[in-house]
Image: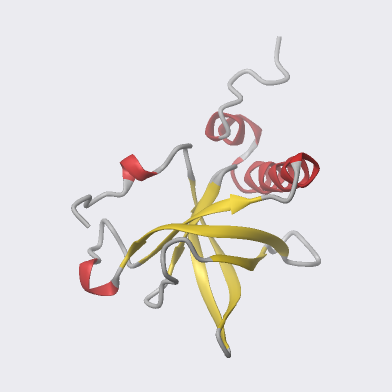
Length: 136
């Protein structure tokens, strides 16, 4: 892994946030934390990353929601614990996966609401690439 920051692997701006993430891995139930999130994906900090190209369902525990936000994702890149640093922690970059456009719109709207609750409307819209959205 020659990239020490991971910044060129991201396609969208991400917001720093910490949410509990739960997912299953062959007879093991794991709970790790997402460190940031965008409309298109998230980073899950873990010392046990899944292999690249693994598709899985995970649940984001969001304090404001009664039920966890369930998302499908695909592992796009991994930083193994032995390659990790403070600037580039161990974990995996996840791209959200959708069955269709309706599911995409629903999940993107849920992520947008989450970012608005955490960071306010102005910063959330900036992170989501909606500068000036809803404003004259």
